Length: 363
Image (cartoon, rainbow, N blue to C red; front, side):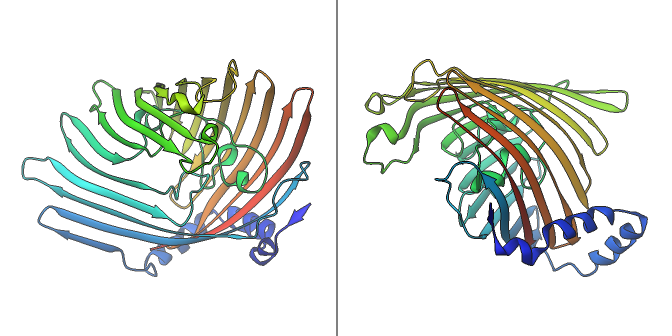
């Protein structure tokens, strides 16, 4: 068992139990009072120009148990981030803008992702983005709902275990050109092109490098109201040619997903097929099923998710629960508990859990 002193200072279990129990009518009144104590927004609006700067810091610690003796024992984590959104709306309704987001380190969860820098133009005919940004195989895909720290695809993997796949293996924040269509009858599609996707480019062993050329992503999403529900389905596909010198397989991955929403209730699931995409091993044949349910409001949210990932020689089972609570307009507490079991057939089995707590400050 590896226990971080930061968790004791945050009082993980006591704080999480107290804040979740406090989501009541009396707390709603307190939330209204808190709004008057919020720090001023860093925003400028003038003649169609809208510029917003968001910055913050997150302090994070964990308690975890892992069968693997080689697992590192990291200290409490502190992340800093800044996000700049700037756009101009023309008299004709065309929006031109740019988004810049940087973080002190790349996080496992979706909230403080780093490295996105792109410009965009949006109109009634759709949206074009150019720069470092996720593609449509990711952004249009439905899967198990994630809240705050991410549950089965979240911050727990900093300490122990391996994340769920969740969606098709994609080009992440590689430079790309993206087109996203406007919704037409509930249907929306997108396509992107990345001339080169590179990761770990300085590795001495060329086989450790990720180097993919001419990568395309395709995504489609369909949503329709049915009574009090909003039901949706999605599909995503990513392809690309691996640089021969890396000896890795080409990128070839897809996923399909579904989602149902009713007010704050979210239910989602997906099937992911990654095959041996960009791996050194041929015939790896990796696939996953994931699903979950969440309840999300502006002041608090909880979610539970599960994932089962299998390949030719291994499997990974994940169960995660977590949530967040808005202590103050600028302060949020977030926590996850994730159980994992990873097995490499006839080689080894690694199982355990990770409990993570974070305090997030933003302005």
